[in-house]
Image (cartoon, rainbow, N blue to C red; front, side):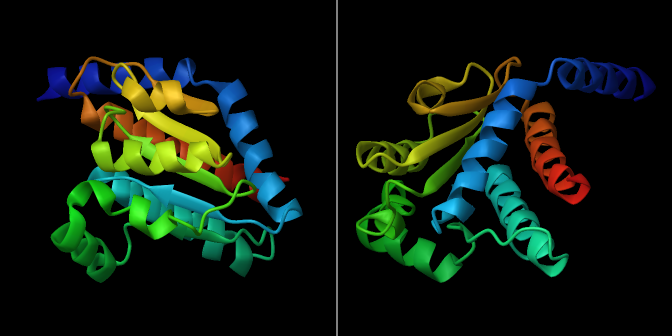
Length: 186
């Protein structure tokens, strides 16, 4: 166990040392524009990435608002299980995010799409739709990045071996906390 922990921590430290600071600055700039434009931030993800989306929505939304730091209009689209399961049941799981943003998201909004593989069909379908109307796409990816990495206007990518979910998801949460902490220190 000790050997595994040492290896995992070493890998995480290496990823932290190589974090894409430029992408984080671009993300912050895109988020700031939503306040200027009075537009909205939508966040999507599956599984652990859905949890990250919820956490990010909480931090950027309520967390910063309660501290009188920033007032982002932000929503994690995986948080309403009744909506997600109704859409999945009635029209297919690939539509759970697309249906929620269809004819709602605008070119001034931001879509943060979180996917370790970058190939989840429900993420790609919603991202393609948002991109087609000019929405800024922030892709948060891992492994090789998949299709989402290519679709993104801004990409925060964690390059790892396929299947290293823990490391990728750790870094995605660190992205959230770096952005949140940036606003607290500004």
